[in-house]
Length: 311
Image (cartoon, rainbow, N blue to C red):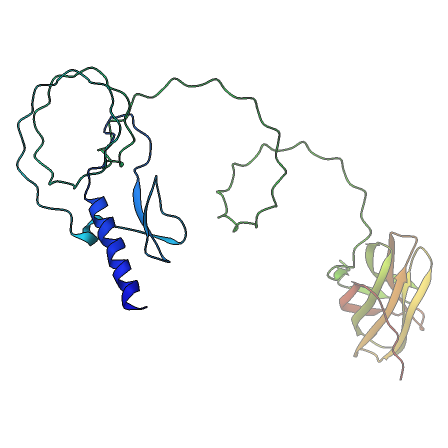
């Protein structure tokens, strides 16, 4: 930029400073809602213009302090008596802004003059007290139901609650059907009540195990024998079931005169058609003699099953 350009720019700024020194009318009425005018400098050319409320996009807000026109505050002058309202004259040129004086006492209200141009916005006053709450308005119509929101995530499992009180005892249910026969329990042993007897040449019962139910048993019999005083003999004995007349075991032993001997019989047996008895029957092969039998032990041991083992 040449000297001539810089001189012209100083003149524009000087003129703007003088213009800003004038007095700008301000509307201080409480109900004023119009924005204050502002001064804006154009970026190209440096021209200062006045806007009603704000600078435009390519303008910059100008502060009066940039020109040094704001002086110290002077003393407040005496408020004169309000005169009669004259006719509104034409707006004069803006004069130089003087120092702000102290606020004088409020004078009597004069008649309302014509509305002057809107002055710059004053400082924001303190917030007034909150007014009383207004009456509740009428309830509006119910809005339509919104769409259902997505299902939320499952929350953590709560602690177990206390155990509830025991409920009353229910009615007895009907009797169930009879169950199938269970497995055979512990073994049972049936023994003879007979302890001694005499054996002759006639087949006779020496001992009996009474009342055996159907099932599988192990039968055994033993007797201690004493021979005739003068004659040797042979004693033969059978283990026989009475109802079916089945002989399960047979044994024989030679008994010398006035000598001791022992006979033992044993056999597995499956009984049916009972209850039935099992007997020990014995006889000698010599007529008109007798052989004594003592310490007779006869028993039937009930078992679950009898298995014939192989090689």
